Length: 451
Image 1 (tube, one colour):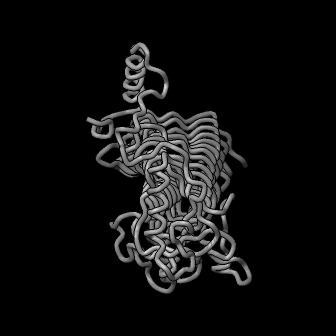
Image 2 (cartoon, rainbow, N blue to C red; image 1 turned 60 degrees about the vertical axis):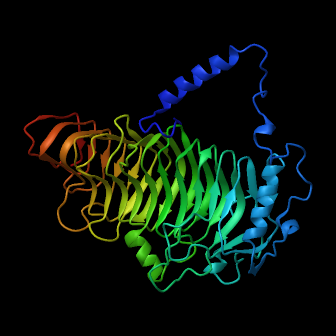
């Protein structure tokens, strides 16, 4: 039984198993580091030197935006695998793909960009367009089928970098055409970095792997940006920014603001997320429960702008979703809300040193049986319509400490089913407007109000 077959595996389980395996390895006399690798187990692989000319052009790719380069790219990737691993280089050009690619174990697909590219020429006259100044992959595979095979499938120790991925047949003035995931991460240590995912329907499926590394990604996924699930060892997502740089005015963008979800997290045992941002989605950060469980993790310096729900928590792990130094705005669609915690949640959500602003209806709607905490946060511009409190708690446990409410409007509302609450050390504009209908243990004190 593999680790993935053990649906209830945790990082602690993995560490204990790894320690036991290491002790067994060290206890065998005469076994040197690396001696376990046996080329004879895979006779197709030649573990000698990688050919000097491992370039997709060498394997027949055209890069002219009209010839299908799928087969040539796959031949290059397979050749790198058989040579023992290494990089396949994609020189500048426009490469058309009517099919999908699998990047084998230990192989990297490398484009010409040493940074995250930006092709504002799609919107702005006179600026570069995909393929004008580097390696661009034009994808038509999977059109009309969001459940189809991903365009790029990464495996153990494989990676993709330095490329722009563009869907030239995606529509603008209609609802978007569905496509499968652009990248699927499988195996152990798959990596995607320095990429522009310009206009995919779905960006990166980071599920069913161990220790994924996603960093330096920009673009505008229309339906889903990054999906994380079934992760039993630490995943990393860094410097990912989703902005409407492909389209921000037509029907396809309006559809995105009504249906799009930028970052979605299912089961993840300590996901580390740093410096991420999204603009113009129905939900910025969504936390759900799947068959494998829910998320706990560390989210630092994250942001969501112009979303209907900046954050939506349907379920979190009991260990907690920890969010610090965030910035969130919500002001479009039905009932714009910064944070919504559903009545299904039984876990912990802690938010600290974060700013909530923009003309929303309320900062937070809290339900469920879990604990939600705010510390050292700033709240501005709520109750856009009506007379709603900034934080409305209907049930569960609530902590609000050291926060500042910068409007002279209703500040906090505690419903009858709130089990526990501590509201201390806060600053209120005007008198503290706190409504409490709970009969349970509610502690309110040491707050300061302005005149």
